[in-house]
Image (tube, rainbow, N blue to C red; front, side, top):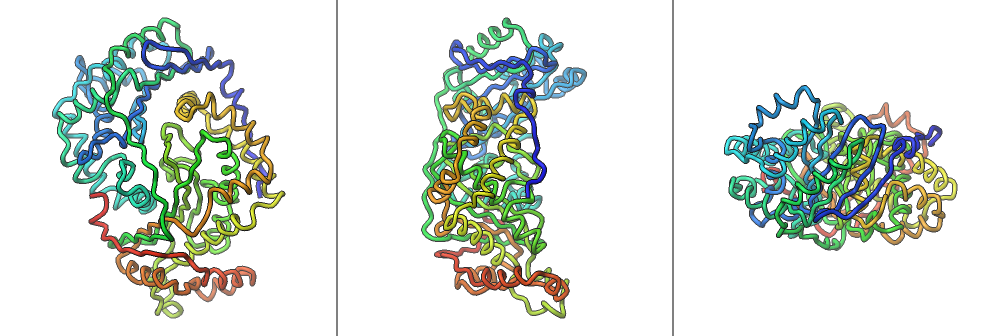
Length: 520
């Protein structure tokens, strides 16, 4: 199972680092001093994100942050900045999530004096030119209207689930906004939001690396020139679904069915029992790990797709990141299951016309039933002692890899502050060490269930209506194998298939949505 454990020491990663938090003039300051580091990392985190977007202006927080870092300053245009900074190999950018926006600047300490005026100019005197605004708004609108629908059905299903899960709240829309929201944005909107959202009273300054004390004081003093923020994110309480509520997004030429299912949970990293749920979640479906039950049952045993995972908080850019990234802390939380695309009936009929030529529905209902049945089994039976010990041992090593870089270490420290903790990564190993099997099984029963959840399925338009009928009527959905595949499977798998095919889902509503009508 977990025969080889990834091992790293966070202490070694930090070297001689020391962590301090001190009062600032107005902003809070978190420092991660690393005397031997060649790089300096500055993070400026504001307690405002897409949940602060005004109604009808969805996408404003994201566009504003991009204009700050992708535009110019009072002294230099965006093009001049690129020419000036290229020899310094500086990296900087903005990440906007639901409740926070983080500006990150990474540079060699030898360029501190040369780069700092640029950092200051970007944050305090951004140029906000019409040309930069038009360019970045066009890119953002293209993403909302085209890219998200065409590039990744997995991400599409994730954002569609949040649209359903947080409907009617300021968490509902993607951080990049809605089509109508982005279309409505003006340069004046950006200037007003910049002044209202990025304030010295909602700013936390993060610093890591090797830098003089004079730099800390200069940064604090300069950021104190920011105005006082007058807006704050609207944090929702997600409504619990009544039964399993399914929305099927119908799009032309989809190659498979991407499934995402989830439900609200009342725990975050702020609570100690989050560590217990981490163990259960890792056992069920750790991201990008082949030992999880979901991966084992759906991919390994049945070769249905290329990944099946579970989560107990938002996982940023799961298709690109092997490990969780900081910068996306949230107070409103949910658990979820991600079934990456499984085959549709049209594709199976073409592959096996003689054997599956009459197939009406592909593998999505079987995969959904199998995944929820696995979660249901954990809720009812809990983990075994052996599985608990193996999973906890793995996590105690694996989580030490979360902070492999100075920027990630600093980012997780800022996340810790968001959740009211001092240093979550350092505290986590102690929490895991103290856990008992009973703690984990209690957390499973407290937070997980399969009777009430939201499900989104992005699928081909040829599959949408037949799939909807199967789910509405709870019709049995046998697994679709070619004969040669079926003959090579163990009897245990085939016997389990029969049980999965008739596993009852508590479906109370099924709706088919045209892809053109999403994120509008």
